[in-house]
Every structure is written in structure tokens, then in C-alpha cells.
Image 1 (cartoon, rainbow, N blue to C red):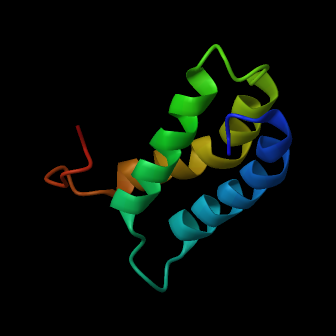
Image 2: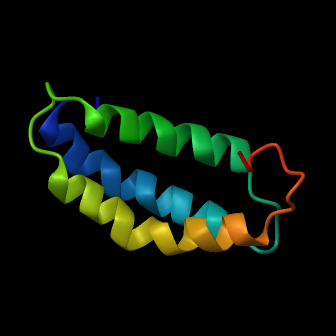
Amino acid sequence: LLTFSECREALLPLLIDQLSGQLDDNSNKPDHEACSQLLSSVLEVLDRKDVGPTAKHIQQIMERLLRRINRTVIGMSRQSPHIV
């Protein structure tokens, strides 16, 4: 669905909100594996050349998630399988 610009317009804010909520949730341990897989899948689609303009969508992700992702990675154990 993310290959279609109209679908991205509707779905991407919801996906970003979900990821943001997962990464900010201090009451439960976030599922880092699921978060990284979802974000990776989204970014792979946005990197394709056949899905139309994606700069705005990448900007949305960076503005909302980059700080949270950096903060999450900094707080992880160096032995975590997600630190590679």
C-alpha cells in the first residue's frame, strides 16, 4: 500500500504515531524488533524510484522519529542484538 502516494498520505502518519508511541512507552518494554522491521520496510519502499515523490514522507519520519530512535539506541545495552 505504501507504494501508492495516496495510501502513504493516509497510512504514514498512523505508522509514525505507532512507532513513536512504542519507542516512548516507558511502562512496557518496546518491541524493538517489530519497530525496526516496520521502519525498515517503510524506508525500503520510500527508497524505491517507482513510487513517486517521497522526500516529504522521509522528512515526516525524520522529524518525528529520528530523535526517538537515537535516544532508544543510546539507551540500549551494547550486547543487544539490535545494535549492529
